Length: 363
Image 1 (cartoon, rainbow, N blue to C red):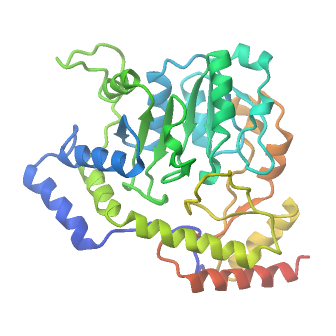
Image 2 (image 1 turned 90 degrees about the vertical axis):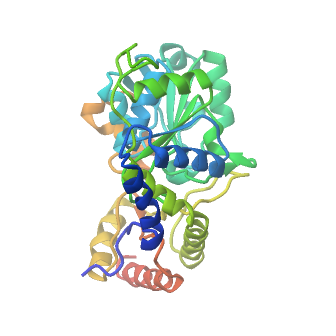
Image 3 (image 1 turned 180 degrees about the horizontal axis):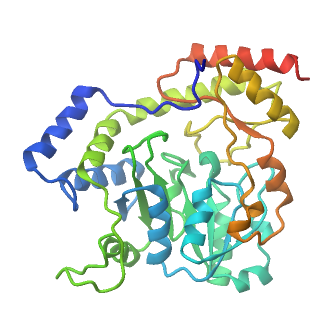
């Protein structure tokens, strides 16, 4: 029996959620840029410290709309160490993925692997802030300027992350958030896009509503990617307490690191950046150790999960273009431990004790 699940969605106080839901019922406005949607966009942009934020119905559509709004070309440089949506969203829209390797310490795309020859053949870069850890945004920005490449950040894990005093979401031509139920902050299902340029933001606003202009004429081919009022109400109710939730998750991560520091290696966080408590990854010594540890912990009531396996450059349907030995090796060894808002520090301490108990029979 699993006592400690890998994740458990956070829910707002019921009376607070009902307060927002009552407004939905009173207005009888369920979708199409309703008052809940508008309020959440305003408050979320202010909370995150960004401009040109728009809500969409999920994080994968956030990526797809960003590509289309930026007129991303056919060949795209991307990371093999991410959730499948990062790559599937490209492949779905017939972009060709050119995988480059990751940095062994940060787990993020390694800008030094993007040479002039490759950059000259490509139209953009899609990079992930893995587990919320900011990419080398300055090096990627330099590559963007040198080779006229669009840069889109999959920031699904990076809610609330800051780099050098400002939101990491302000880097790149666009950054996308997942607001899925498993995230620090969610709308049950949902996503958001932050654009650097207002013109791209305005084009995306049309794209998510079938390409309609102000006269409801389909100016270009669009899609329906709007967030509904019920989901937006969930976001508003959670936003009221998100700072408290996040502080607690960060405390849980810090406790894990302190108690397991002698047992595992951890991802190296970027300098001048903030930890956000999104995930609790650790690096096993070998894949064999990981494969032994997972079922043993399950027997002890601790659910674990491999984030992210397999390396996306090894998946045939994504094209398998690029040599990525570091990503391939790390994807075999990364394991995530339980992390959710309503777990206690004692829960973390107990889980660490069970991890050490399991390790004794492996090492």
